[in-house]
Amino acid sequence: MGAKGQRMINLLKTAYLICAMLLGLYAASQLILILLYLRYRRQLAPLPAVDELPAVVVQLPLYNEPYVVRRLLAAAVALDYPRDRLTIQVLDDSNDETPEIIAREMQRLCQTGVNIQHIRRKIRVGYKAGALAYGLDECTAEFLAVFDADFVPPPDFLLRTIPYFLTNPRLGIVQTRWGHLNASANWLTQAQSLAIDAHFMIEQPARNRSNLLLTFNGTGGVWRRECIEDAGGWSAETLTEDLDLSYRAQIKGWQYQYLPDIVVPGEIPPVMSAYKQQQARWAQGTNQALCKLFFPVWRSDLRLAAKVMATHHLVQYLPHTIMLLMFFLSPLLILSGVMDDISLTWLGVLGFIPPMMHIMAQYEMGSNLPRRLMYFPILMVIGTGLMLNNAVAAFKAFYGRLTYRSGEFVRTPKFGNRKTKTYTMPRGWLFYVELACALYAIFGCIVALQILPGMVFYMLLYAVAFSAMVGWNFYDQWQLNRLPLMPEVEADAEEALVANEEVDPEAVTDARYERVYS
Image 1 (cartoon, one colour):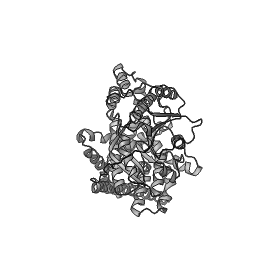
Image 2 (cartoon, one colour; image 1 turned 30 degrees about the horizontal axis):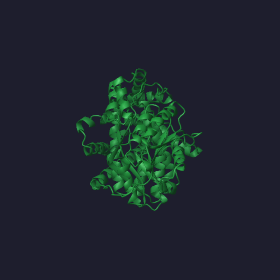
Image 3 (cartoon, one colour; image 1 turned 180 degrees about the vertical axis):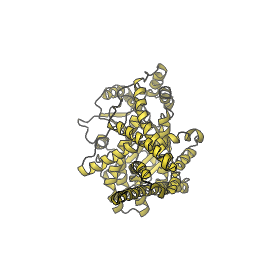
Image 4 (cartoon, one colour; image 1 turned 120 degrees about the horizontal axis):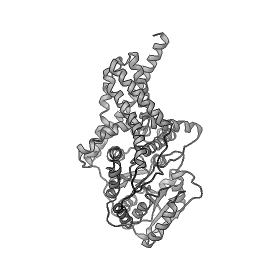
């Protein structure tokens, strides 16, 4: 090998080592969150006693949600709160049959005595952020609760969240924990629920109780109007308007209360195409927020630890890009013979930190650990397979920052209990790149087996992950083409749910998915 070739190999080796160190730093930060959680795990916020409840507006931002809107409206109307102080804003930007469904439901629901407003904008400016800002201008209430279309708030939600604001004038945000309407639908939803539980059971409490910055999760929370206005209002500059506004509010000095004991169940994407779409939006939006908020965070009066952990939070989707670079470099470095000089044992040890967080989350929830953790390998495969999907989203975020384009807010499809081919997603160029990556990973396995057997596991993980992405694409298309119509028994159950009768929404939703996707 010539001098130029050797310099190139050394450069690639250096890049690989830098990537490994960055991944190690990120994993170490996860360990810090675990330790913080253990330190403050018993620090709970008791519900304050209040004499009088204030006016509250419940905002329901919608865009083409015909399969879940009736369930959402029923849950909103069922909220236990004085009727003269409760207003429900249906912020409907839909251009399908959703407005007609809402109009029919409102004729019936208005008889309950709740003030329901069906608000439609002529132009969908600013996507969800624009809808929430528009609704804010249309009301005078001091407190605003937000629920996405696929979430079902419990009846006592407002009674268990609003009192915290009344005893602390600097409290700007209250966030509750996400639950799952369809966690047992299939392997994909089981794996996703593990990741969601780890975030809401460990990371969010750790950040909140140790006075670190944390994000509003977009739904299942309440805002103080003064906090929104003081922080600059809802902005469509990023695709994660919730992260953006909540960070700006906390930088301004507003306090945040996270309540893990209040659970608002929501629908998990049951097909990989919808999940990848959701993850791409979150990855792009979070990296947009990184570009927008990095310097404001470090110029703020926050303590150093808060700034460091805020940065850790804002870069949470960059490890996928780093992993992708390491994946591309690995076979080349194995062939060149320099991987023998690289010891990654320490990185393998740090790799046990994410499983620790998932185990702790399920233990704290009182789950059946063996049954729940059997899906962790699937989560690991999915997380690895999303490298390309989320790296492309990160590139769009940084490129958009340079060209002053925020990108399009692509909603995550919600399926409810309906058969539909509306959400059958076309096979784009990303599918073929994932296929090429799967073949490249298989090549890497062969190379590692012959030259460096110690790397076989890592290359095999890449091969399985990308092959799973390709296989899931075919599987999703096949399943969506054979979705059965909702049986009468499930239709009756959903009608009862909409009528506010005693029906377990999780049982209604899970029954259909278990039959179709298992």
